[in-house]
Length: 169
Image (cartoon, rainbow, N blue to C red; front, side, top):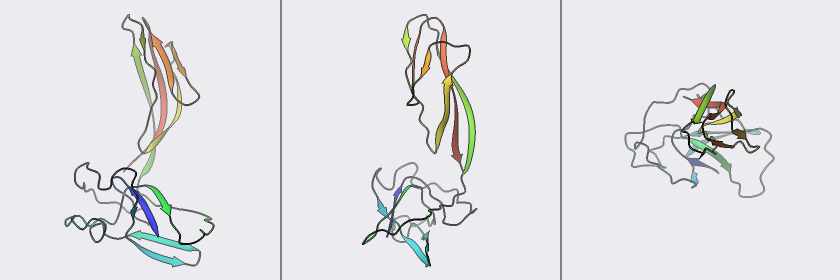
């Protein structure tokens, strides 16, 4: 049995297949955050390889979605459940049409003439921060080991520079 955490649009279980550009119910979550839902899948065992392919979403999981027959889901996490002891997993592969992209941003703050605290951190969705450093020519930002920063400004600006990876469809 396979269960998955559902958020907003997943990927077929085969390489290089473009998903439909369809939005379901606006941005409303179909499954509450943190809940697991059993996947409605085709199961194809082939020796030590098990292939799961999503069935149309409106057949069993969301029968009220009459006009939406997608064969994909947004899968943020995958969990395998077994009736007995789990076999050793040698390799797990997923296929997606998402592409990793890299970019860099500079964030500058302060310079109001008043003492201000600008401590913070960056968070990404569908990505990760690869590098974070104080902005050159600025003073006062100290990057912490956990990826956050501490910064107090008064008359001079401060800031950080970040390089991060993200996916886009």
